Image 1 (spheres, rainbow, N blue to C red):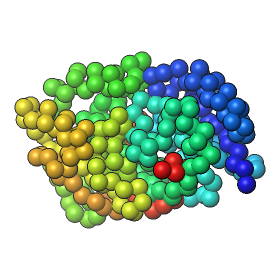
Image 2: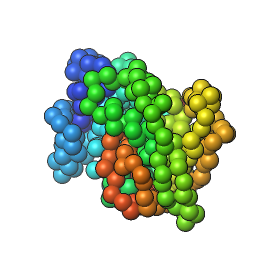
Image 3: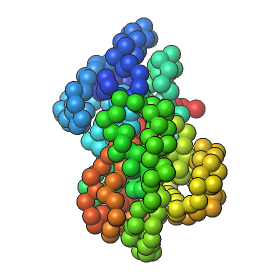
Length: 293
């Protein structure tokens, strides 16, 4: 059966011109004879509403066009259904897409849509909400707070906020449990990961597996200033789990009791965390189209 596609397009995602990009993409899809329709989002939260309206209509592959936040809105509606979704990465980090090698180049997207295969992936859940890439508290959550609404998008903008905030950040006092094992202390960052990276090939959880029914928790303790370059190399070199000042666990459940700083991130965006919070994993509840090789 020929696949049909419904595109949900975030025109302002990421650092580039998505309107111009999608215009070129539509021309390519028409040349290839791929049937599709599309809707543009108008505000935060609109993507989910568009998907809900589509669920009652004849089946089509729902395609999110945007960053990790747009993916989150679309995928959150499709969790636990038999509907298939695809994703075209157009954000600043694109963590999940990078892990799954989903292309963004227009010349490769038609092949991805036509010959892609279905992968049923795990989904993380924070209280009643979902995440698909990473969530957590500490320095990365502080940067997400600064990054939120900024005009300086992309890797350069992210690095700018990292440099401005690093020397003033003293860590977060936290009390939480991993599969019942208690942790109390001060942390530079604690990341709960479903995927293996934040985005931009910053591998915060190199051993993460989207189909293992587990979450990978990376706990970074405060470290001396001289160690920062080594930690950065380890992050992009895919061996942060072997670093000093870093402890990791693979778990099914995270219970957060208290945090001294309220900043929290979910799939790269600011998230208001209600405490106490329970974070769990739902095994293989999202059907996602991925490249066939």
